Image (cartoon, rainbow, N blue to C red):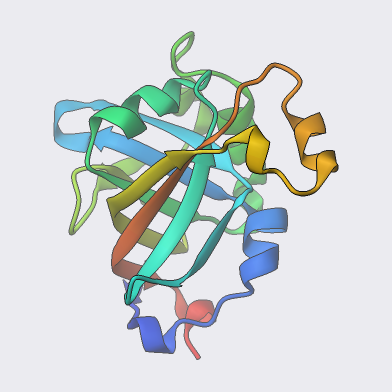
Length: 175
């Protein structure tokens, strides 16, 4: 994949469909030590908070990636062309705790430019982020009762805000 650095002001993104339809591969850990995990995420947001560009993702405490998100100071969020959807389905449905899902996915982890967490050779959009805020969803603050239905096991997501340090992607993400 031929990616170029993208200035935040030049980023063209369909923010709803990239999460809902295309998904991101969230990765956290230390690529150089081969201590990382990745999972597919389809809930999150991108914007400006505290005068910083951010990407926000959520991870349930039951996920193996949660351990890495709690331990390491940075993460990446990578999007892929539609041809890689089967790999993202695998990485979102199996645990790295129980199997070597990464090697079975066919994706190629590689070093990031700004963070220790890996990025992927096949990705056509890469966000490298430094964690700046985290919290847990508190059910007593759910205003819409339909939200609680998504938590039948009381496994409330932890929210992670990452300051975007670097963006790279192919020409489809430039204005």
